[in-house]
Length: 195
Length: 100
Image: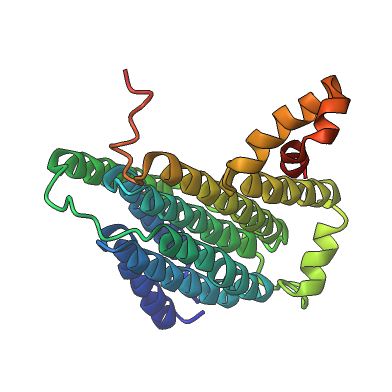
């Protein structure tokens, strides 16, 4: 990637990244993060990771960020009222993050050289190359990931659903059914509850 | 051609911004967004280094990170929803039931 384009994209990503943590309204934070993610997707494509770049935009921006937006709208979260509070915390957080950035800079400056591959394989970063790696070397991890996604789906539904009438009412009705089947059969209320 | 250290520097800056977001903001959802920002900063470093050594492994790891991030976002947002339902707030300062 030409260095001019990289500098533009990098500046854009950093500005939008600051927007994520400085916007008062959570919806604006999500939109700023979506900009960062699109920007990083373009950077991925410039690094010969075209498949990942598209996946980044489709999965991250198209699915995860929209999920965040839906949750913010569902909870009807307004902008932060406590703007001037936590000055000490903000100072501490900024200094800690700046110290971390300085540490990263020192590591990058003093990092040893790594060997560079000048000629990449022709299919580097394509769907075929990614799939070949995914379904051979990383097959076990891939299958475990599918189990993880299933567990996440079930867990998310179990956590987010309203634990109200059905779960509480069914249990006593059922236990009464087991203990005294004759009385529950004649009781229409118990039938309605267990159904 | 952009040197790889530029990509690593951008990745480091974005990661530090994410850390600052988690430390500074008190809105749980915005803290969560800052965590996603950190995940993506690391992804950029992985892709850049994988490109540099000519290996697909970096991209495969980024693929897994994206999958796990999707699962994490789904479960985390579900936790936030149930938290909001029980405590009626998403401010981390007000969620102090376990504070001694």
